[in-house]
Amino acid sequence: MTPMNWLDQIKWDADGLVPVIAQERSSGDVVMFAWMNREALARTEALGEAVYWSRSRARLWHKGEASGHTQTVHEMRLDCDNDVVLLKITQNGHEPDQPGIACHTGRHSCFYQRLQQADSVEWQAVEPVLKNPEQIYK
Image (cartoon, rainbow, N blue to C red; front, side):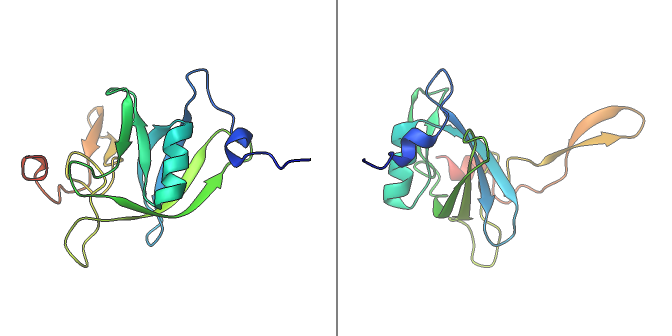
């Protein structure tokens, strides 16, 4: 009996995608959410760097290909339902001793907005821009 291919154990959605959470290994920060298809996940495993499926561009996207802010993958985990992948990563490409930039807005994390309740309920940016995106994407 042949062992099952590790990619076959994933419950892919109707579009052949699986949601992926990128969590920084050192801080525990969730820095981004993206999608992968089989090829992206296989390339991620082979390269040791995150490769995602860009739904807007309809192509593979090696994280950092334009910005230089790559993600070194230390560990891949699959949730209990086999339908979400967690990557434990190091976010690369910023100043030494500074948090890496994962977000295209120049922030450490894509999850930089928090729901605030004051006079009204609204989303407010609560994380700083570490580098102007115009300087990142030339």
